[in-house]
Structure formats: structure tokens, C-alpha cells
Image (cartoon, rainbow, N blue to C red):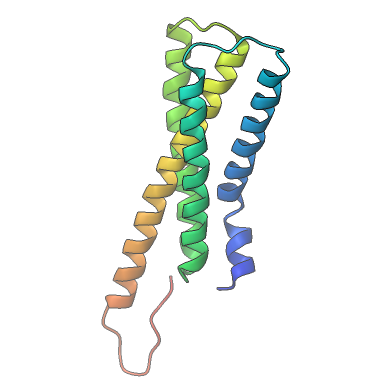
Length: 152
């Protein structure tokens, strides 16, 4: 299996794609607010600021994964953890959004962006920790003399 940087980047497209979507979303929200198109919902800046931290965290995880030398087989699990985090956290927050009153569609959009970012970020961290643990286990397993460690 390919173990190059370009293969890693291709394998991690859902992860860095999440970061790009979050940055574009935050940028669009800033433009919308600065043009005065919508009023700022209460509590908005807390979610906005914490989403910036998530974007920084996604960048950190991508950098760690690309510099780790992991087998590209690990990236599939990282992507799965990311998707599971996004799905689970968004589903829980959609339930909250239907039960709690929201001020506007803009607030629902911001809340959804926040839920996607945090769910994906938590999934990424879990995926990174799992990938590190598996790689440690694979490199620590005894192997017959003359055989390279398996990278399954």
C-alpha cells in the first residue's frame, strides 16, 4: 500500500475537507454579519470562537497524521471516526434545535456548523489516538528475524 504524503493527503480528504468547509462557513458568516444582513443571535460569538478553535484543532490533527508515518490503512478509520462524530453530534443537536426556540435560520445554520465542527473534531481526536495505539501495537509485536513489521 502507498505510504507517501500525497497518498495520505488523498486518503484524508474528508478530514481536511471538513476544515475547509468550516473556514468557508465562518468566513461567510463574518461577511453576512459585517454587511448587517442579519441581526446577531444571542450567544453567537461563543459558538463562533469555539469553532475557530475546532478549525485550529483539525489543522493540528491533519498535521500530526501527515507527519506520523502511519500506514494509509489507518486513515480510513480516522475518516470513519470523523464521520461518526459529525453524524452523532449533529443528530443530538438537531434534537435540541427542534426542542429549543431559535431566533432565526442564521442561528440554526451557526448551531449546525458548530455541531458539525465539534463532532468531527472529537471524532478526529479519537481516530488519532486509535491510530497511534494501533501503530504502537503493530511495531511492538514480535516478528520472525528478517521480516519487516506488518502495516495492516
